[in-house]
Length: 280
Image (cartoon, rainbow, N blue to C red; front, side, top):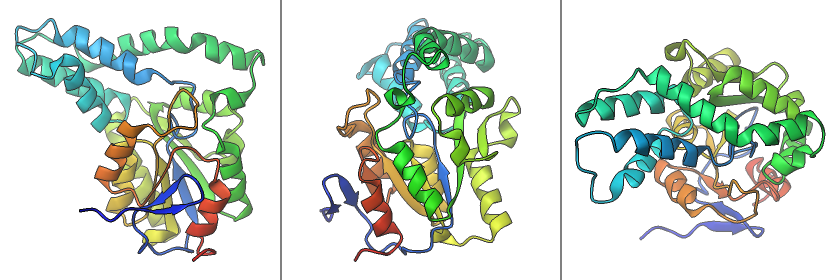
């Protein structure tokens, strides 16, 4: 039976109280779902697209159906560059007896559909008809401000294409907290990943384990944090902007080894007080 978490405040759940606190010098943030809600609904768009393609194969659907099948691998690869989910789709279609298109074609179609879904949100920000807060995980700015005051160097790393991340971070008002340290997916996808970036940050800054903290709502970045023995903060955020837990994310983030879980950043001051070793 698992030990229940220590609860701080109203929403902070600490699962590994043995972590070394008080050493944080650098922080890596995922973007979509961790800070940004601009692309809320992206999973549904990707799943719907995948189900359409999977349903065209001669294979019978698994007992749980194509929707669950697609959701499983898409969730597992969340945090990786989008192309990896499309490469997986291409491989599955071939395995199931289909004749797939190249993964890049599936990525283009997915981005077209997602673009249709989020176009009005982007335009509302570009034309200043809506405030950035409408598309930020609650408490994001306060968390970034608090880290800046503490002298922590922050990096933004996303599986979304780099030009989109740069523009959206600017529209949401978070870009200044990262300086030029904003990284998104590249066409040369094999030479960029969050894992590669994290290794570079560690090497260039001579970091050790808990000197680095990683914030994310995806499987990948939390696994990356665990691999380098950094601090792993899982954001089980609801992408509709509410302050509730996303139970699906919560389960996945715990499975991969998150040290601490939150549903949003509204108690970021208390969370950082704990992580910086200022609270027993």
